[in-house]
Image 1: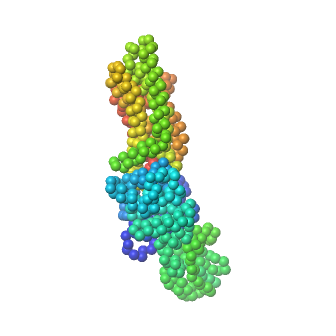
Image 2 (image 1 turned 180 degrees about the vertical axis):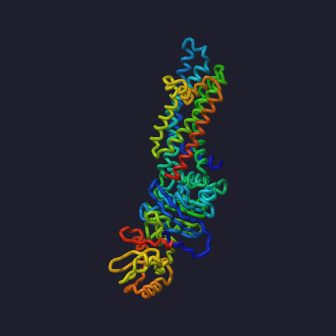
Image 3 (image 1 turned 135 degrees about the vertical axis):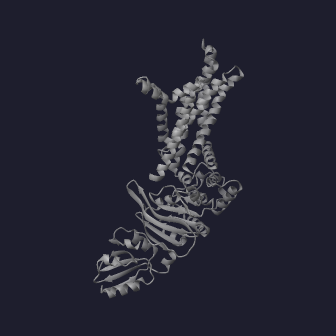
Length: 325
Length: 248
C-alpha cells in the first residue's frame, strides 16, 4: 500500500520517487516507496530506528542503488543520468563525511571541486556557504579540533556549497546542545526557502517546527504522507466508529476512500481514509443505509505524536486496504 | 578529468598532512641509504666486483632491495585509500557527488601513485649521484627505474583493490602484504611443478619481470605484464564499488 501524495499545486517537482524497493540480501529494507517533493518544500522523514529512512536517503543520493523502482532528481534519472542528477543533490549523512586532518577551508574547497566548482565561483561558494553555516571564524582550523556542533555545520556547509536544488539531511541535529539545535533548525528553515529539503529525524517537535510535510515510514513502507497544515487544521484522516452489526471487514474495505481499518475493543473500529472532506458524513449515511447499527462516530484529532505511535506501533490487528493505493 | 585531479590532489594532501607520508619517505630513504653505502663500499673494496660494473652492482643491487622494501611499505600507504573512508563514512561524499566510480578510482590511484613516484625520485637520486664520480650505464639504470615505476604501479593497484574489501585499514595492509608477497615469490613454486605450470607461475611472478628490467633487458612483455596487472586491479576496484552500491 502507499499513501496518496498531496498533489495540491503544480509546482516544480524536484524529487520523484517511484516504487522504490531495496533488499539487503533477503531482507527487504524499503518496500515500494513513492513520493514527490516540490521546490521550496521541507519534508520531514520520520520513522522508528531501522524503518528504512537512511536507506531511502542513500538511494536518493546515489550512495546505494535501488533494487527496483526509479528515482529522478530535478528531472534527471539517478541511474541513467547519474552525474547530472547528483549535481543537484547535497547530502549530509548521519555521520558527517569529514576528513578530520583537513582544515575547514581545505575540506569545503574539495567538496566544491567534486561538484564541479572552480576558480572564482568556487571561492564565492566557499565564502557563501561558510557564512550561511556560521563558519567564518573557523576556516583555517582543523576539522578534528572542532566541537561536534561545528563539525555538523561543516557537514551542512558541504551539502549546500554548490547550491543544490535538493538538500538531504540525515538526522542533522543528533548530539547537539539545545542552542546548536536551534541554530541548525533556523538554518534548515532558511534553506527551505530556495532549496527542497528532506530531513530525517526521531524528534517529532522538530518536524512540527521546521517541516511543511511529513512522511512516516515503518518497516520499509510509507505509512503516511501528509502536509503539516492539514494536521494542524484538525482535518483528520481517521475516524472511530462503533458498529453493533458490523459487516465483515472485507465489505468495509470496498469503500474506496478507506485505506486501513483496525479493530478496537467493544465493537469499535478505527478507519483511516484518504482525507476526503465529508468522509465522516458519507460513512454515517452508508452505515445507516446498510443497518450496521452505528452507535458512535467521532473524528480523531490527530497530533503528530499520536499518528506516529499509531502508525508505527506493531501491537494492533490491522487490515490494510490494497485498493486504496 | 578535473574531478580525477581534484580527488588525486586531495589524496596527496591528506597523505602529506599526516605524519605517515613523511615517516614513510624518511624510513625508506634511510634504509636504502644504508644499503647504498654498503654496496658502494663493497664495490670499492671487494676484489673482483669491478668487472660487474658499477651500475649493475650498486644500481641494480639497490633497486633489487628497493623492490623488497616496497613489498612492506606499499601496503601501509594504500591501506587507507578506501578502508578508512568506509569506516569514517566519508566515502558518501564521493558517492553522492557528480563523479563516476571510474573517476573516483582513477583519482585515488593517481594520488597514491604520485606519492610513490616522489619516493622513486628520492631513491633514484642515490645511484644517479654516482654520475659525479664515475660513468654510469644510463640504459640499464633507466630500465631499472622504469621497472621500479611499473612495480610501484602494480603494488598500488593491488593495494587499492584490497582496501575496498574491508573497513579495517590494518586488515587491508596485512592482506595486501600477503598477496604481494605471494605474487613476488610465485616463481619459487615453479621449481617443483611441471613444465607448463612452471612457465605460467614464473610468468605471473612480479619478481621475474622486475629482474629482467633490472638487468637492463627491456622486453615489452614485461611492461605489458605490469600494465595489464594494473588495469585488471583498477577494473576489479570499480566493480567492487559498483557491487557495494547494489548489494552492500
